[in-house]
Length: 348
Image (tube, rainbow, N blue to C red):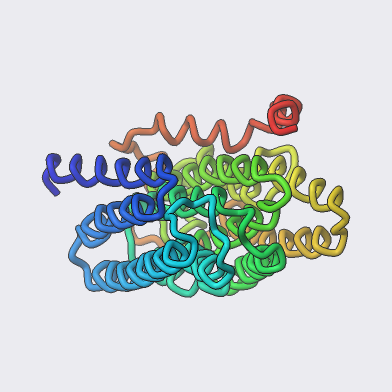
């Protein structure tokens, strides 16, 4: 792809998200979401592989459906209330439709079916953009209009997402699908606490972006997209294997890694709000997710690949890829737990 075209598409991605961030008017927010979708479509289909084209088509159809529902619901709300402002969402039908459409946009269960299929058809860098940047604009809209949504509906979406995100990842052999289910589970954690402490949703989103970026960049550096090829990494780069295993455990939420912090805060907040049963179900759902992260760690660090290598084993191969972003994201994905007291001061 031409660097000029790439620069245009990436700046359009940034523009779409910024437009949605800055808007309090439904039409502007919708416009930002549309610019976002149209900017990423060429990036997804750039390799002209049938699988990539299929994934792009699926993504475009789901996002276009969600955008149409948002436009319809916001028009209905404007028709009844007489204004387009996001803060004035008094019509329950329009509010529920907007929540369903935004849930479809970020891949919350039960509107999650497109997410693993689409991510599986993309290369790792575009998959990273889809899993992180593309979540920001719809989540901003959900946070802005959270008070208008039905609390029971938000809790149901959160619980279903964490359970399905854990359950769906158990039987996968493709790393991109595992990361897609991981994304669904993390979105569930963000949504469950939204009505009680929106600042915790933002904290969980930030930590999710750091950990997912580190995971995708690690896989990109070692050219791995399947679980069974993970077993060959240790001979090429032992230190990277160690950090990759720790990043996965951080995604699972194990202390003393960064991923433990948002889960700890969210469970604490749910217990404070008098929801011990919800907190227990969330903790158990986190255990299901942790199982498939542990399975990946086991494959990576404790097994030797059964494949007979016909070529000489590449010992610590040199790479031409930039490793500075990976190093920064890895450090943040593993070592931010000590700043927890500062985070408590910020969010309380």
